[in-house]
Image 1 (cartoon, rainbow, N blue to C red):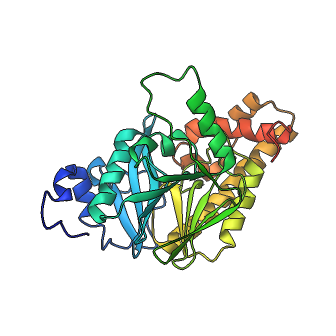
Image 2 (cartoon, rainbow, N blue to C red; image 1 turned 60 degrees about the vertical axis):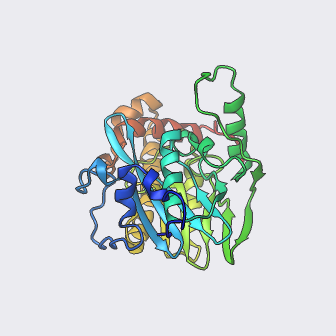
Length: 329
């Protein structure tokens, strides 16, 4: 943790107690065991709300940040990553509200004096972007062109509530790859294909062998497909697995040990395949999507977080793909 300035108020004095609690163990986090409980449910893992935000240092200057969010009665984590480079801080994905993104910004400020200079929109969904106005206005915001269009349309929506948080529309577009060199650290922004959204970006640190996958990897969260491209999602995960990576960081669920995260990424790939195959079976049997929702059997996936809310959406989306109704790339 950074030293307090020689004069003036310590930055720690301004932080909320919950942030201080998480930061107290950030520099030397306990490594999760390889037999860590495989669930996205924080309470099943023995956590309480007071244990969040949860910060882990994945490599020198590279941190994951987990904060709780709600979906109906269920609670699970939204994950951001930030990199302290010596020439500013790069943040991969914000949080789902100004309040929560402000907490992330305060957490970063307690770790380093370096300003936030780069923000990467890996997922354009609101649970990762709704608080982006809390980042410095002079930071560079990066996104794929598809995500840029989504955010621009939302910002231009005449029916958007007047009291809604401002939408930050990124100005730096990444179509396939952009490599940043900050403080001697190489950071690659990659588009490996459509997956959870049409514009999923990942942040790859080749020297540290860390890949932040955002919502393309939902650790033990049922595949959420409201804007997904199901079959392409499988291919995108396989492209990620082909990279030289030790630590795959999910966009939801827990940041476990590198070994567990790699195993769980393959488990997640198989889960997406299972959703596609079961829905395809029902489609081939002549059922409509609403009939399929009532008859689908996803086996062990039905114990995963958000199964009840996301399974119907996933079935409808796979039906759209099978019927040729999804936008072409």
